[in-house]
Amino acid sequence: MGFLSGGPYYDMIGRTGNNVGRRVKGKNVFSMRPSKSNKAPTVAQVNQRLRFELVASWLRRLGSVIDIGFKEYDAQMSARNAAFSYNVLHAITGVTPNYTIDYAKVMFSKGPLDLPNDPQINVATAAKLDYSWAATTGDSNGLATDKFSFVVFNPSKNKFVTLKGGAVRSALAYSLQLPGDFSGDTVEAYFSIVSADGKMVSDSVYIGPFIVL
Image 1: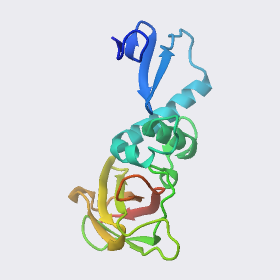
Image 2 (image 1 turned 90 degrees about the vertical axis):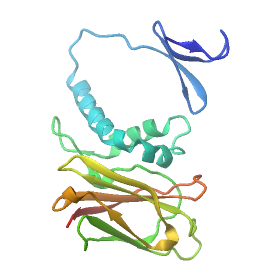
Image 3 (image 1 turned 30 degrees about the vertical axis):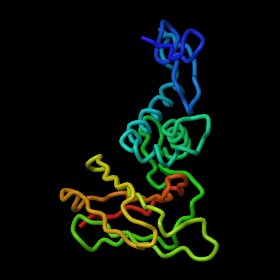
């Protein structure tokens, strides 16, 4: 059921018949429901569907991180749609039907905030990743109060560990706790930065695969 939020000449939210209304970036978007087809999908359509499903299933669990990281990337799209579009184009590898996520190319944040120098991870403690980075020097578009967010993906268990705002830039290090059953597994590690007021973000950074102790 659709609702007219301000009378018959205002926004329609929801579905009425074949008409669908929704709000995107403060604007009312009005469209028609796609009609069903009895035709078998083409090879190109099947390939596209596989790619879409792969990226959607991977990013779905990063929604709260993406809402911050991609909110300013495209003024015409929601943060999640923008992240989906970017990663469908850039973060898939392999050939049909065996597409996989290219972990090194995944982005969950895109923005102009400066990245730190020499980001690293040291694995020295059981079920922990020790992140470290050097201070940004010179004319930097970044402040000591900027906050780091961390994302770790375990492919063998298909699980994420995420922590938003876990450390400030001036700390120069953070030890991220992982589940105990991650020990012995290879994980893919990332970080991103957001300003203290939440208005600016950095690109997300892939640091690489690591075997958890």
